[in-house]
Length: 210
Image: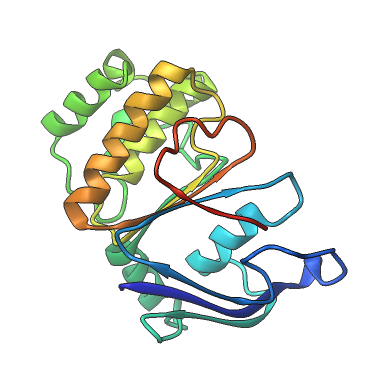
């Protein structure tokens, strides 16, 4: 999936908003292998953009084409398509609180990491000692690092990151981003990230204004 093409896309909740960016109600083509950052105030549609690409929001006008095709319509086909093409780090992380960090990672659809690889990545991100603890017992910042490992454990052509470092200090954010860049480079994948605050980590990203 080399391109994601927005054709006059306009989310219904933003119909009455003052728009002047390069995303909504215009033509936008995102190319695989490139890195993009959407930085905007709350309420401008950052998460909405990612959810439209992922296929979980359909309340919009216009078209989104993937290699000039639309998304699969059946849930089972859509799940399989996501497993092979898109990895998504949700803002709310979506971990199972009653399962251990290790279980959460290994249960990821399409996970290709061995337990040894998970341990190695967890060590780099400073959460190796937490792998056998229930995620519900971890701080949000610890959960965020676990969710990052889980997100990149699958094959992907596009990596969607919704405010990925909201609860991480600069050092841990840099380590996490390095891991994500390594995985994206392995697959020649594109990255689309959103940010509300500090953008200093996103060097070399193309900025998309909403």
